[in-house]
Length: 349
Image 1 (cartoon, rainbow, N blue to C red):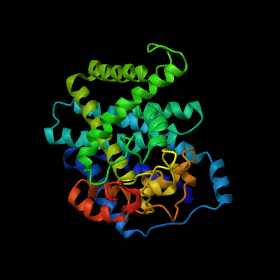
Image 2 (cartoon, rainbow, N blue to C red):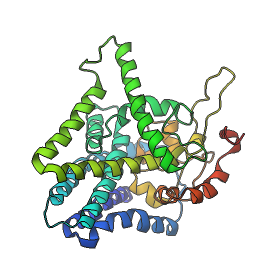
Image 3 (cartoon, helix red, strand yellow):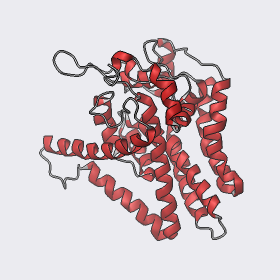
């Protein structure tokens, strides 16, 4: 029964639906829940550092319920997106309601869309990767699949990785360097893959080209069915989802850098190259994303069996709370800079 705790991840879509349905001030229920109520709960609930045993891990990996808890996000996310787009075209909607609806749906895209897509994007099964890519579509971030799997996991915690925040870099600066850096890098990776297989830019295997077509097609379809307001809603909520993802990227590796070996290559990715958090609420709502150190140590590992490692740098708060703190750079720096290991950051050596 305790395995069903991950149903709590659906609390985000639930509060978003409540806001979209009742409107008025309740359209801001989702951002208040995500960035006020959850952080408060993280401070109340104890930290859980317990790891699953090898026998428990084998059992959990056989239980399909953990996979279906991810798959069901597909209809939930698309249902809320189109419900939000439909409601946004209501002529009686006030501007403050429209803004709240966009933010709320954007939160769903970040938490239940991109975050789940990230988990499924590491799977080997074609159908799971398909669902993952589909979840990236409404966020206009399908290139994330290529850059994250073939770029970030190879170069994480190095200057070559746009998704690794530098020491003393603010989250607002990081949004720009990471978003544009990852997109450019995704194209470079795609071109390299095509070249290695002797394929042209217009090859059917140019996934980046397909992503552009799908994403533009999605916005065109929204425009044709829902008009200007509908496409504005779709695009703006996608931006919110992207900024949430990049805020998570910011805190995951902030200030951590791998050292170079005598050969001139970077040391392999270890448990110490990602920030770990064992705060229960964030772990559940984000499908164990906060045990990011173990994820990078072995990216094929499913979320339900991720462990924490003593040698991993520990965040003083959960990921949701840390995202809020990151919005105030001086506060973030005062809390986190002293926690960055001296030997792991070239800016401090």
